[in-house]
Image (cartoon, rainbow, N blue to C red):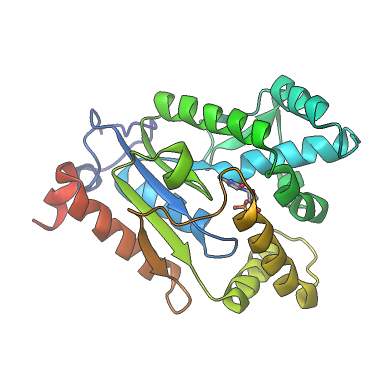
Length: 252
Ligand code: DC
């Protein structure tokens, strides 16, 4: 049985629908919190036989490092050198890839409240963003068949990506999705403040000077408010196949 680029065994039927192994392709998915980006990006990557990069996890890791090292807000130079020293990277043998800092896995820490509440501030630091974008490009060079999701993947990190998506949804729908996601992760949720937190994070993420949340001019925009995850993935998969000649074969 053949292997995908990520090393997984696949059946003959799957191979036909995946990107040929020698074909590099970057698909970017950007959008605000709670649009289902991570789940959608993972599922899309699986269907197409590509790797999946969660860039939000990288900013969350930097935020956990900031909080756990008890640095003051003004110590931004120290924060950057500590984050650089942690050598944030992924263990690609896991599905989904597990983020490591100082070679230790960071699992539920990334989703804890203090990290979520501080991540917009940490990810507004220009030098830190440049460091992360550099890392993302190195990752893409090592994993050139990639679905990457975040806020600035189509606009800043990979402006030449052949297929870009921007997912959006009503804030109230996004808040409800986040609540369900956190509950599934076994974390306690204060439902009343979720909408406020989401709106606050949107505001901070879209007004920062470096790599703000934005829809790239050439991105395909999709409102997911009334769509199921499967419907979103179906739509994205069809768009990728229509745009990438090597993928056109599935439906003829
Ligand atoms: O997708 P997420 O909720 O895990 O992202 C966490 C935060 O990281 C989000 O508030 C904004 C920031 N982020 C960013 O600034 N740029 C990215 N490419 C990805 C995430």
